[in-house]
Structure formats: structure tokens, C-alpha cells
Image (cartoon, rainbow, N blue to C red; front, top):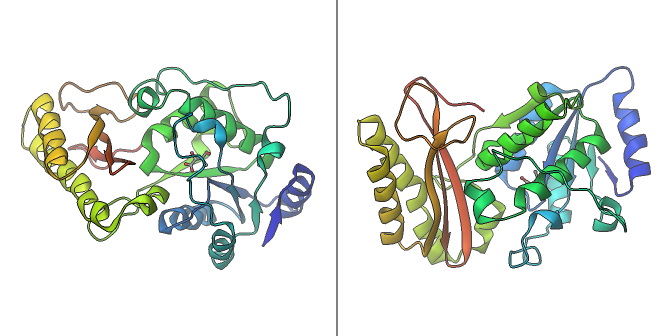
Length: 291
Ligand code: PAF
């Protein structure tokens, strides 16, 4: 496995991997890798001859009072895990390589960026779109793989790829991978490391409350009281605050007032002991929802 920290090294490594018309997949990450990331790598392998993973904790997607400094950085262990998965290339630029002095460009995707995490974390999706477009231009992958855990992020990236007519990767080659969960249902996240043992135990209420809410919706309960019941369940289970509990159209992310034929998605962001957890699940009578 080769590690590139400069664009020059990255470009020659990418050229070598592509020789003979080979296909390259990219798995963008911020490191602190867990089984959820490894599921992305395994999916990437199905779509390409070679897999590159990027590791870059992107300062532009953190707000001034967020956890940029505390964000776990486990580079040596990340590389060990990626190498064990047979990843061919790690792209690990420093902040100065990604955002050299004078960097002045911001990529902003309206609409799908605006509600939910976009409302709770102003500027977050501009930071994500900017770095992901840069990563796409740097690596020029045939395929890029992201977790459905960040459902809104995936919608933003697909919107950007469609709107900007990207070809590397094309919007149809942006692959979403279902969320990997712990035994008690908690979605894997690098931020789960922040939870105290007590907080971790309480966090299991998040997928439980969501599943109960989905069952209630599918059994005919009205949307607004069901969302309120999920919120009450979480507060009662020891969550400190709720950013949102929303039922949305799975593709447009517009609020869904009722459960219709179009796939809907339940999205939640809630805080426990200072840790912000997000999760989402499909709500559909028509089979699994896909962005
Ligand atoms: O999902 C993430 O880890 C990040 O938001 C991403 C896509 C790597 C951009 O920094």
C-alpha cells in the first residue's frame, strides 16, 4: 500500500494504478476508521480494480465550537486496517496541501444542504462539498463510495455531481453503503468513541426509538405525533437534547407530512453527554429506500 501526502506523489500513484485501463475507486474518510469504513472499502473493491482511501480531517466542515481538535486521529491504525483490506493507495494530505495559502473557493449546494444537519451545523455541507469536489479532482476516481449513515451528505454529494456534470466520478458511480450497526443497533460512528460507558448504554435508545416510530408509522400512526413520541422516548432514555427528528422524502429531503408511496426516510440528530449522534432509516412499504 502506497501513502501519498503530496499531489505530485498522488498523481503518479494514480497514473500507475490506472495503467492498462484499470478502474479506480475512492473511499473518502476522515480517519478514525471502524467496520463501517471497512464495509465501504469492500464495496469499493466490487466496482474497481484498485481502491484508494483518503484520510483528511477537513477543518472546513467543522463549526467554530465543534470538535475539530478533539476529533480522533488514529493514522497508524487506520493504515494498518486499510492495508489488511488490500487498499492500494492512501491519500493523506495535510491541511496546507489541501488548502494552500490564498485558498478562496467555496462549493455550496442549495436545497438538500439547507435543513436537518445543514440547519444545525451552518456551513458544514459547504465544507463537505468543497473537500469532496477537491478529492474527486485530485484522485479522479471512476467510482466513489460513501456511507448511508450520512444520508444528507450523500444527497448533497449526488446533487453536486449531477449539477456540475462530474465525470470522475459520474453521479451514477457514487455508491451508498447501508449503515453498519453494533449488536444493540447503534450505528457505527467515529464519534461513538466520545461516549462514556453510561452514555454508550443510553445511546442504544436511538435506533430503538426510531424502529418503534417506524413500526408505528407503518401501522398507520400520524407523522407529527409519531415524531414527537420518538423525541419523548429519547429524552426519557437520557438524551440531553434533540437537534431534529424528521420524516423526509428519501431523495429530495423535503419534509413528508404523511407516509405516501414515495420512499421516506426518518432522520434523527440528538445529543448525549456532549456527543452528537445522527442516524437514519428507510420508511417504506415499497422495499428499501435508496438515494
Ligand atoms: O463522511 C466523512 O467522513 C466526511 O464528511 C468526508 C466525506 C470524508 C468529507 O470530509
